[in-house]
Image 1 (cartoon, helix red, strand yellow):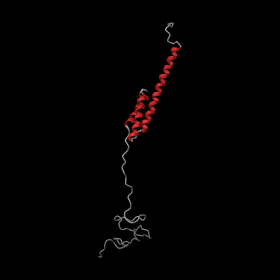
Image 2 (cartoon, helix red, strand yellow):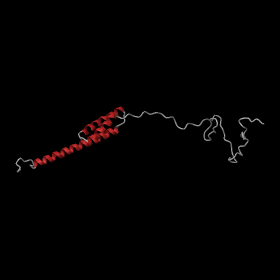
Image 3 (cartoon, rainbow, N blue to C red):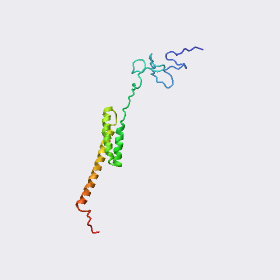
Image 4 (spheres, rainbow, N blue to C red):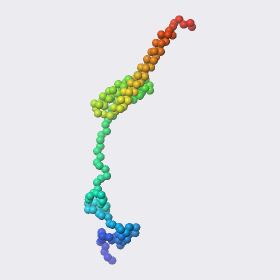
Length: 155
């Protein structure tokens, strides 16, 4: 019984097969080149110089997200409520939007778009309210001008 040394010699495996005649191996088999400094049991990367290959991802740095201005969100919500319920509330939303845009510039916060939406929606709802009031005023003035509320009716 012969004593085998580990690791086995160049092209001999412990079971006695050579690398060229192992089942399923191609005839022109070339052994894998292991490089000093590579992790144990892993072949060296042919595209990398010696040593460990670089990591998969570059280091990640955490960037604190900018804070949203709460007045901007309030402005947009109040302006939308002004359109849906009471157009007079739209003025409040528009004024809040102006204040929120100023705060966004001063404090370097996000929310400028929401504040702008609050301004636009608020002034549009206020404009609709003014148009409706003017329409009613014109109708009432026309009725009075035509003598529609005459006390001398024949009823």
